[in-house]
Image (tube, helix red, strand yellow):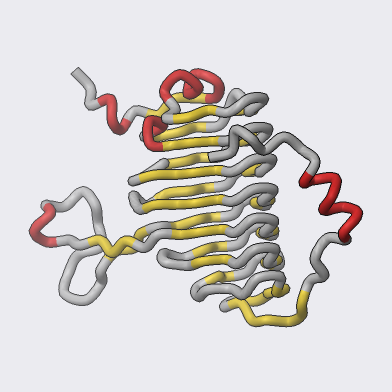
Length: 194
């Protein structure tokens, strides 16, 4: 019999397997999720077609967040994605990498000859990740930070900063949403938020 832990399910077939699934969550038909029992996704969030997710040790996605087409989340560590986060097409969120010094870099070799390093990743509320960006293990992206398309995020990013490049560099600061706009969001029902 197959090891169910590593079986991938498509789209809405994942819903009953999730650790938690909020209201009005959309899992498009062609998204794949592995280890769905470790994934929590809150109200009104979406995972679009061709996203591939390995929930690893744990994956939490807040309210009103979106993982767009061809995104990858993998690696086996913990990932936290806040509320209202946008993850652009083709983005890679990597929570592990091979130890290269003195080891082989191939998961199909015996465990005695390979080693993996893990690092939890956190994307703060209101973060925006541009298309085709890569986020490396152990990174925290601050609240409201913006990452430009095709960027390599290999270090922590300050809240509300605008970053771009490979590796990313701070190129400016983003204005927080106006008081009027914040009141609209604060008036929304957040009582069931985890």
